[in-house]
Image 1 (cartoon, rainbow, N blue to C red):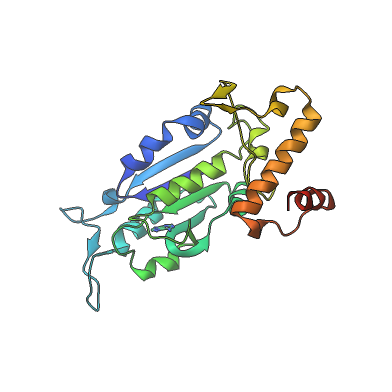
Image 2: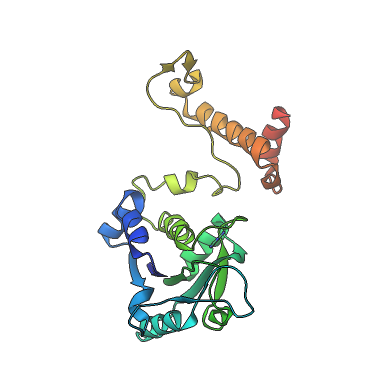
Length: 238
Ligand code: ADE
């Protein structure tokens, strides 16, 4: 899977991509990220990417020409791609959309805005607008990294243990169960005995119960289409 990022802060993206799961996936060649510096697609001496807003008001607006020039350059390879504009006005990103991108797209082009946003006419050149949540960031770079990270995790071979993506929160429709590692006791808090019992059936049931407990507490909205078995466990918790 390939990602292309258009930004005025390429170093922000590149730094994150060196580390952890995504860094390893890139080194293994199972994912690829190309970062484009928007200023390389300006035509003036000062490499200017923004200007005052028509109609007045505070802040600056990003001009369309550098984005247009960059997209033309990128698209000249003729490869099909989905062009995504990161903005708080977009469709809200979720694990379901991460899966959808992983299954349906080979190349995602992520456009990062800054300042008050990008000239509205950019919309003529994008396929979809995506928001990562109901808050306003200073730019699209963090949102682009959220999308890259969550989609790369889904690629077979990206995670050390193939099962771990399946175990992630939201993959099964509810939140994750608690995890523990050594020491067995810390400041008087003990690891639950069941996790030391070696009884894998009982451990699986305990994890399911705790996942449901977490979901009930923090995200009851997720507990809609439970199986009869999960419903029974949930009822025991209430
Ligand atoms: N740019 C600024 N805020 C954003 C958000 N919430 N999601 C995606 N891109 C953004």
